[in-house]
Length: 161
Image: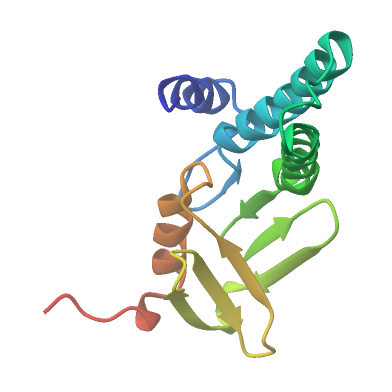
């Protein structure tokens, strides 16, 4: 399951949809996110189709409940995860911006007071007003964003001594 998304991510980079540079760049969530949304939707539709076409054996205890549970679980996961497909990050020598389907946030590099990794493995850049931009390992080239933060604000990173 990781080979196809990696190939798609490479195609996105080579096509210019994702540009990973230290001074300037833009990126999106990994295609793994879109693949999970797509597969969850396909499974929900497939389970619904099979159940309604061929019927559910109600003689088996909890069989209908299990079928409904699977359809709902796959449909809900597809719906809940779909906004993550629209997340994007943009950076240049002045600022880092995140845009999502339901919001956006930006921090200017000169105002950044903290760069750290959270318990869940995400990275967070925070400015003096408390505004944050966050990205995870599911971001294509997420380490490039971290290197851009280091290039803009090396004083916020501990020395490697």
